[in-house]
Image 1 (cartoon, rainbow, N blue to C red):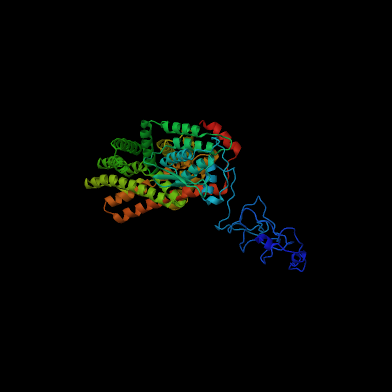
Image 2: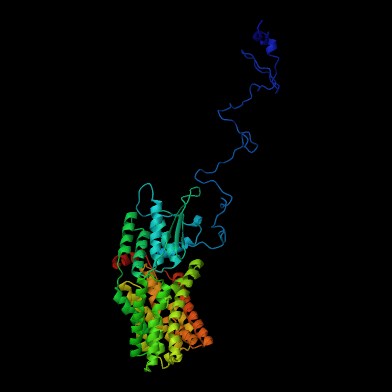
Length: 564
């Protein structure tokens, strides 16, 4: 007998001997029945095992427990996400984790304000971009977009624009082509921008160095027009078209020739000498000294000398002419001649930009700009002090108060302030369409200063701060109306407010060995310069905070009339 025959039951009684644990008799099969105690009894439904191993974790949901699955369209929740039961409308107030109320973005404001607001927001809270610029179906070429933003930022920074506005322009270019997760970074000489496609992708970073600076507000306005077109939903500018327009902006010549710039420096110095009490002869002497200094500075620049030595050389001719007139016993206010020459050299543009960067949080760039201003000022001091020292040794009787003797002449001084602002605008290579507006803005600034200081007997520092605030307010309004930079409307207008006389009196006191009075005058000059810079920035911020100018209709009209 075989083993199979031994395992086979011999009778029906043997087959019916197995009883189900529940007390029921298991049916008999025609096949052999398994009598192992580990076998699954018949009648107990057990799911058949699949091809994959079953989950036996103690955290698995048991069979028969009904759990409603989450909707398919909702993403998987995070520990930092808002609970599903939370409703912002039901809550009385909601403060985001950063502790700062959320900023509402509208498309009616200029692109500068929108980009500046988004730059101050965390990357995760920025609204998703709506790329309107044309590019290939595969997406924008990331390295080329970053390079375009760097080249645009280079032109803006080299033209004297503030670091915050440069970052806003770079971010606007990247966002126009769909690169929303980008972070621009601007310092005094270095531009960098980083783009990360997602949290798991490697970032792409590019940088560019600004090695040369030249104030050209015509080029600055053209770059702003390009960025405005890139940010406009109704204007489609491809990468190739943007590069072509950028190349044209770089190739454009300055709007004014060299002789016009030299004549403008003479007009600026002569007008400044009239503001401090000079007459016709003083006007001519200051203009000649400033033009000689300008030509000497051009000569030094052609020889490759740094700007420090250019300022030193340019400061000597006006001081030398003033000392020569004093030694000749001419009936001329030499102090007014030297003061007018200093007006043409004071770095008011760099000072305003440096203080603006500091007030907006760019402390490294602000420190570098203010250090540059300090070096320029030291160069002017060395040039003027050298001439004054030799003049005092030769017996020149230089009286500091001579420039302020006499009653104010409002009409003549207002005309001089207009001429000074006009000359300053030409020196900054502004568009010819903006020269008249900025000239009038400079006249308004002097009227406000004269009314407060001469008529109201208010301190010169407070009067200068208020007048500079008016300049910043008007300049920002004009810039927002035309969707352009505010620098062309503010920098030249603060020319009549620059502390030329206080600087000269301080230098003269040091040259005459009156160090205390000299340092007092220099401190006053620094206070006036800071009042100008803070006033201009405060006026600009007030206009941004309370006034909204511009709409799609006004934007299109401005574009058609600008001629770009």
